[in-house]
Length: 374
Ligand code: GLY
Image (cartoon, rainbow, N blue to C red; front, side, top):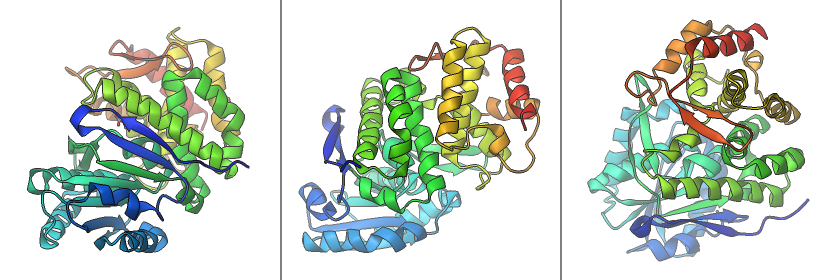
């Protein structure tokens, strides 16, 4: 076992630059970390019912030790909270709490809370600063960094939102110890994604260290989060609003969104599991189209299996629609441009690219084969 040390990854966006601080005990140190950002010693925290029970008291105590007054809003846990209704409730609460333009809002939770609170901060008084305190692995390596904020619409996930960068991200590696193994592994799906899209050496590192990391090694966890965040920061700095390279971060996501829609966004399939499945399908398709060596496709599948991650469609309980219906759902993804599906494929591990040139027959065949395994 190795211990985590604290490291910073800088997201170098000029006047909106910020640090992602990664390490142990950051929840206990949150007060002193946040204090330098404040114009007055007062913050508002928004969290959810599950996270509040585990971490809110520690955050409040830390803020109090730093002389910072805090009030908290606890929303229901779950994807349903990424809604207009919860957004309205949050903004009205922040106004009632008299959160001003120069104040800071703290998002304590996973991806749902981070996205919702970031969006609330983006529109409150035309924009206030916010601090992300991500409590899931998925939020630490992906959603808390990069400034994508928003809520879901009836027409699909994440269709309403804004780019609004946080002022600071505090990724406390210790809070990952409180996650259920399935949630941890689902977040690991996003970690693997980084190796697959742009860093073959990181993927090889995960093949070696993934099992010990999943078993609880803090040093390895911190290193996996740091490398994931560093890669994300690098891409976000190059392409903040996703005009180009940032789309690579969506490796596996068009498949994932279709599968999540097909399973009703329920706990039959968690987002990170869907991303892992989507990455494996993207590599299958890349192999079928001759872009990627078969050996790499096999390594992707083998690593997901080695980790015990639900990475195959056969891991989804219950019925799934057929390939045509899944393709129909993929076509509704917001990455569609001029009616053409844009997918992230790969020339090998660590070598993803964006393409609008995907023959529907090949996509259908990959989905049929994956469904036939069930
Ligand atoms: N989660 C993908 C992105 O932030 O661009």
